[in-house]
Image (cartoon, rainbow, N blue to C red; front, side, top):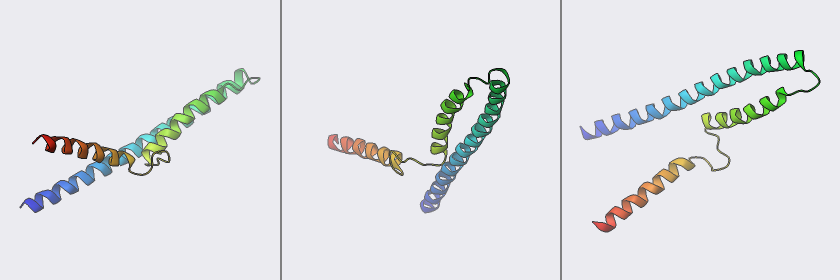
Length: 105
């Protein structure tokens, strides 16, 4: 019975992680769609009313940087800290805490 419950918990945990990942990707695509629509509007306004200075590029660049980081997070692309860095750090801190507790017992 314990083995069945453990398997259920593992499957549920995997499902939760997958669901969270899908929600992240969905959020990224919503963000991307909004970015495209707003940028089209800003480009139109800029070219229509003040074509001598292309100020929309500043908005495009600033928001674009945020969009890139959102995409990197949504698709688990972390070139700076490596794959599974966060999980490894969590495990490391949990092991440290476990070792501290076992010292005092």
